[in-house]
Image (cartoon, rainbow, N blue to C red; front, side, top):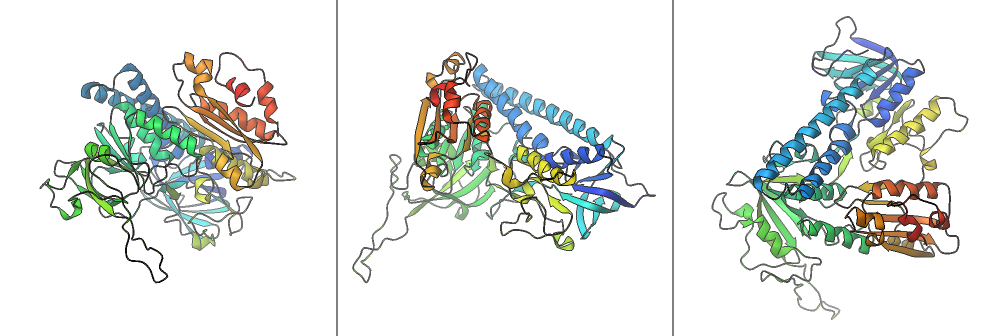
Length: 538
C-alpha cells in the first residue's frame, strides 16, 4: 500500500497519523530488504523516502549501477573509436546518458512497486525528522504525516562532502557525481577535485568518452593507502588513457570563466613558476592570468614535490638563516598559482553520513566524532529500538555492506539464539571500475608489514594470463600476501580485467580459512581469468 506515487504525492486527509510496527527512514539496500522481510513476517511497515527520484536507494539511482552503465558505454565508445571526433563523442555520450536513464528509471520503478504494492507496507514520499523517541514527522508535498513506530531503522545513506572553497556552491558547471552523471552534453574538459577511487572511476570513464581530464590531488602521494607498485600501475593506466594529474594542489577559489566555463585558482605547493598570478586576483575576461587547463597540466604534472622537468618550473625548499642551535632551518616550500579553465568540475572529496535534518537528538540518538550515527556491534543506536543501517552508520560505504547490515538487524528480530554481528563480518572486498578494474580484499603489503606479520609476496603479470591475451586486455598485475609459515591468505590485489569477479573467489577462500595451496591446486575452467589464481598462489 502507498500514500504516494512517483508522480503525485498525496496524504489522505483521513489518516494524518500512522501507528506501525516498524518505520524505515530511507529506501536504500538494507532498509528495503528489511522492509520486505518484515512485511513477509506479518509486520506493518512504513518506509519514508525523501525523494521520488531515490526509490531503491543510492546504488540504483545515483551510485553503482548508473555509473557502471556509463563506464561500459564509455569503454564501448573507446573500442569502437567513437571517442575520436567531437561529433562521434557527443553522439556516444548522448546515447550513454539515454541508456543510463532508461536503466535507472526501470530499476527505480521496480523497487518502488516491490514495496508499495504490498498490503503491509506504506511508502511515504517526504523528508522525515524525529519528534520523540518513537515518533517521526514526515514532511510531504501536501502536509506533514505523523508516524509512531515500535521500532525505527535509519537508512539515509551518505551525501557528497563538499570542501569549503569560495564559489564552489554558486558557480555553474561544478558538480558532484550525481549531477555529472546526468549531463545532456559531454564536457570537452573536466577537472576532478579529489583522487580517491570515486574520482578515478570518473576520470577513467570520461577519458574513454574523449574528454580531457585533469585530476587535482591535495597531497603528493598517489593512492597512499595502496602498495606503491599497485598505485604506480593504476596511475600508469590512467595516464595512458590521457588523464593528467596535478599533485600537491589546493583549489583556492572557483568562479565562472569568461567563456562560459569554470575558472579555478589552484596553488601547487613546492613549485615556483615565473610571473605566475592567482586568477582570483585577475578580473574575469582579461585573460592575462589564464592558463589553458591542458597546457597547465602538461607542465605541472609531477610525481614528487622536488622534481618537475618542463615549463621552466622549479621545485625548491628555500633555506633560511641557521636556527639558534646552529642547524639549518627551512622555509615552507614555495607554491605556484595557476588559473585553470575547464568546462566542468567534479567534486569527488568523499561522502559523509546523511543525518542533516533528522533531529536525532529528539530521539536520543548520538553521533560519532565523524558525524555518523553511533552504533554498537548489533547496529543499535544509543536509543532503544532504533537501529542504523548502511552508510549513515559510518561503516564501509558499499551497497553490499548495507545488505549485510540488514542481516545483522534481522538476526535480532527473527529470534536467533546468537545474532549475527558486525564483528562476525569477514574480509570485505572492494572493486574500482577503471579501464582495467582494480579489486582487493584483506591486507596489502603495506598493512601486513605495519602489523609485523611474517609474509611472502606473490606476483603475476596479467600479460601472463592466456585469457587476458585472448581478450586483448593484458594490462595490469596480480599480487597476493601469504603468511609464511601457515600459508594463510592475508590479502590480494588484482588490477586485471574481470578482477571484480575473481576477487570473490579469493574472499571465499579467506572466509573458509583455506590456505593459499587450495587456490594453487584448484581446478578451474579454461580459458578464464580465475585460473590465474593457480599461478598467482604457486
